Length: 408
Ligand SMILES: NC(=O)c1ccc[n+]([C@@H]2O[C@H](COP(=O)([O-])OP(=O)(O)OC[C@H]3O[C@@H](n4cnc5c(N)ncnc54)[C@H](O)[C@@H]3O)[C@@H](O)[C@H]2O)c1
Image (tube, rainbow, N blue to C red; front, side):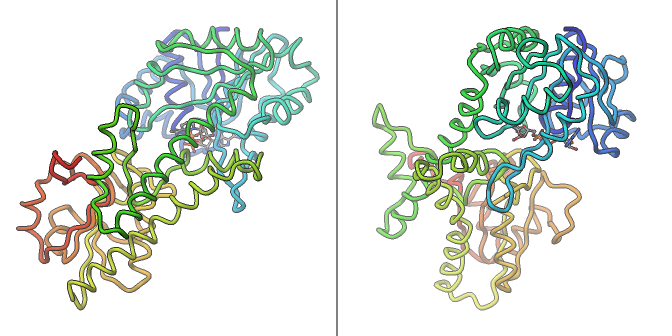
């Protein structure tokens, strides 16, 4: 088990390939994105993920990690391709199927195939296994197969890849044990073995847990608005209870994990997953709710042609990732409604949909300032100083970062 072929070199595949190569594995990294493969081979890596550029550059220079466009023979094949939702919010497994088919000509008896992509329960057993058996090899006796879901936090991926506990679901016990040998080479957390379908469900349950709990906080924030209560104070005081730990409300849930994975459970059990489905609806309704709040605030303040300044457009703090971002959705909706919007985000590059301004310019022009993302650069701002710099005096802090400590 000395050579690994990692298929898909995105947020998950690239750091995994780099870590494996740093642990002595020979790694072939495959991606269908020619530009990405060329950039990697020219040692030209996105530096936003802390530590990744250095690790990848040295792995590529040393020859232990070779980015390429098609798979080659290896002992282990690791599939790390996207599983986006379709328009009907079902898992689009096209990339997983294509990736599995692409390794077929290179599979040999005794190989291990690991699926890292997030998938609906049953995918490894019912979809991946039959595709791999098109190689003529029998999964279980001649090929080993496991699902090892990823649970890293973008912005902290290299650290979490090593430190997080891992769940490994084998198609049989031998597959799980074999996959454990690979992960043991770099994982310092605990490794728990189970079957493939349980591992698939565990990953989805983790993100659904977060989604449902955030939805609870968001629903509470709407209730408190209606009852004229301060949500942050209510949650802060309720959390003084030893067995209560309510999450923070916000402008919605974005990204490609927490906002998507619950749908993969709904897809498999639509009649039973009522709470999970409702939580998705609550969180998806938050951008509209925030826009409504902004409109009410400027109307009440009788500002005729307000300039609305939005701090942050990414789906969460510390990343330039805009996928399913509720903050971006809010800016878009305000613009659609004809408001003049100034947005700023220190993490976003190469963005062309609308102009982004510096923090200073954004604040200076604001009649109404809306904090949408809790980037550390915004947390460092003193809200009293902010008021002095703004054109107007309306501040809507959707993340509660500028509240006095005693309220949080
Ligand atoms: N990013 C995260 O934080 C995170 C966390 C946990 C789980 N996941 C899951 O991991 C999986 C991968 O996510 P990601 O964020 O790395 O995706 P990504 O979009 O960042 O990267 C996927 C890469 O796979 C490549 N690709 C697509 N089809 C291919 C094929 N047939 N052969 C070779 N390469 C192919 C794409 O070009 C892309 O570079 C998804 O299922 C995702 O839900 C992601």
